[in-house]
Every structure is written in C-alpha cells, then in structure tokens.
Picture 1 (cartoon, rainbow, N blue to C red):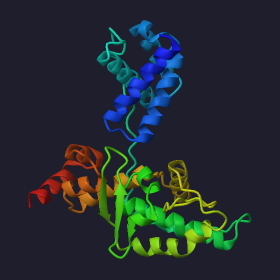
Picture 2 (cartoon, rainbow, N blue to C red; picture 1 turned 135 degrees about the vertical axis):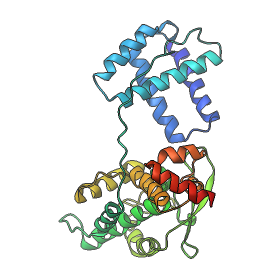
Picture 3 (cartoon, helix red, strand yellow; picture 1 turned 45 degrees about the vertical axis):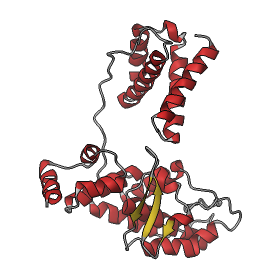
Length: 303
C-alpha cells in the first residue's frame, strides 16, 4: 500500500473504534501502537503475509513482554478485520496467530495496605525546595486523591476528569463520567472521605492555584495549577506505595475495593454498578475471589 492508502486504513480503523464506543485515550494509544507495528513490518499492507507477522511477533517477544506483543497482535488483527469489511484486504495474515499470555500480575491490596497508603499520603514531607505550606497542600491533595480512588472505585482517567461541579459533599456523592462505553453515574462517597476532600478544597487547592489557575475547573491539580493527568496520578500512587513497601497503582485500588466489598457481603450487582461494568461476568472476573467468596456473594445476591 502507498502511504496514503495506509493512512486511509488507519482512518477506517479509527472510525471503527469510535463506532464501537471506545474511550478517546484507548483510541489514541491503539493508533500509536498500530502505527509503530506497521512501521516495523515495513511492507505494503496488501503484501503482508502470515510469515511476516510470525517473524515480527518472534522478534518482539525478545524485546518486550508477551502482554505487549499480544496487544500489538490484537491491534493488527483488528485493522485487517476492518479492511476486510471494506473489501480492502483479501486475506488476514493474523488469522489463527496467538501469543501465549504472561501470567497476569493482579495486585490485590489488603485493607491494612490501603490504610497504610492513606496514612502515608497524609504525611507532610518537608523539602528544601518547597515551603511547609506547599508540602502540606501536597499531602492534603494526595490524601484526597487516594480517598476518591478507593472510596469510589473509579478509573484513573475518571478521577482526573472530575470537576468541582461534580462534587456534592453535602449529599456525599460524586457525578462520574465513565471513560469506557460512555455514560455517567452518581456514586456515593464514603463519609470518611468527605473531610479529606473538604480540607483539600478549603486550603490546598487554592494554594496550588496561587500562581496561575489553569485548572479549567478540574478537581485535582498539580503544583502549578494545571489539571492532573493520569501519568501524574500513577506516579503519585506508585510513589506512596514505595514509601510503605506496597506495589500500588490506581487500578489496584479500584480492583481491591471491588474485592473488599464482595468479601464483606456486597452484592455483585451493586459492585457492578459502582465499577461501571456492562457485564456482571466482568465484575466477577475482575474481583480476585476464591469459590468461598463467590458463594457468599451469590448467597447475598439471592437474599
């Protein structure tokens, strides 16, 4: 294929993802991955063979994890599926190809782990580069961020997208725009989290915005007044985890909350709504539960 035709293929692939309701961040990541994969193949799409793809997969498995290679193959397979739908490809060189998945590293935090993370987030850590007031503001913001992550079970992108107008602290609820499959939901905020969010809003956020308010109304902001991004939030949670000896990231808090709720007797359907899953089976797979936990959850659901 010429470069123009390759771009057309990428455009058709992007349109297909929009039609399927994939999140913007997912589409951007997948498009970047697909462009890189096609560059590695370095052939016209109409001339790519199964042997070419097999050789590429074998090479990539020596460079990156099996999980990454599996995602690259999935993107490539999806592209050829779209091309076939538009009669632009006679064969699919990815058909039947599989990458043995790596064992999933699912981090499940215990409730003591979560308490340790919350306590560490609140700890003020003075530095020579920041005033005590600014260090305190950081601690208040970090504690509020973790309280919201764990208390609501939201995705990192959903938390970063929250705006001030989405909070109703009097009713202890938050309006969350789902990052997957669209939609939105009003979720209950645990009463224990409310004081930490209030403290952040009252003293920390105004201080973080002191130089320039570039927040556009976003709830969580950086020290220079910009909206917090997912990469920043990931580093924040990971850093707090390292200080207490726990491997942590935003998604671990989301998964752990779901598991803790079901183990404490919450119905799977309630957890499904909280997480924003379309399928109850997804929620069941999502939580790290043994058969005893699942039996108790089903019994609760039956009652």
